[in-house]
Each structure stands twice: as structure tokens, then as C-alpha cells.
Figure 1 (cartoon, helix red, strand yellow):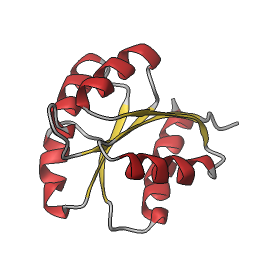
Figure 2 (cartoon, helix red, strand yellow):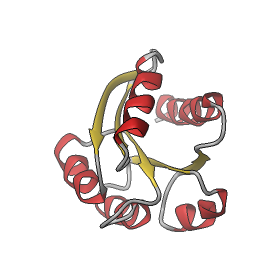
Figure 3 (cartoon, one colour):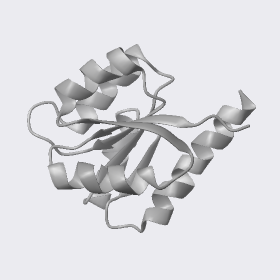
Figure 4 (cartoon, rainbow, N blue to C red):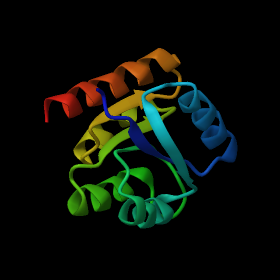
Length: 126
């Protein structure tokens, strides 16, 4: 049986978080979805709930998604992080920060689901 994922969505825009949460709620692979509005909350919730996966916006005020990714990966390397951004040119920075994947917000939801699928497959192997 495939383990379901506990997901943390991090984005400073409420509409982006709400849309992602609605999308993930329709996927049977997802067990729980929590939300954070910035990088500081992301680090705090990563410690508190230890999610399997974080969907992190790259650009946010305060601690941006790249810096939050570095902090989280340094403390909890098993937490998977996908950086989401409207700017495809941020992919190199996202991966350099330690993100496990990068998905452009302009891509279809199927691309995000494919990426989640690779994480589920990896979990089944461990």
C-alpha cells in the first residue's frame, strides 16, 4: 500500500494557497494539507508537523522560499521540497538551495502530480 503524503503549502498569497489546497484535496495520494504564509512560518511548521512534502513559493517577503528551503533541508533533509514559481529562470536557484524539484506555476497541474508521483514511488522503495 502506498503511504499518503502530509503536505505543507507555503505562499504569501492566500489565493495561491487556497487553489493549491483545493487541487491537492482531490488527489487520493494526499492525507493532510497545512498552510504557511511565509518562510518563517514554513520553518516553524516544518519542525512542528514534520510534513512529507513542502510546496514552497520562491518569492515571498521576509525569508524567501529559497532561504527557507536551505534552513529546512539543513535540519530535516528527509522533507521533500518542491519550489513553485512563476519565473522558470529560478529553477537553478531552487535546486541550488536544496529543493528536490522545481515546477513552474504556469505548468498544468498534471506536471505537479507527476512530480508528486516520483516522491511516492521513492517512498515505496524505502
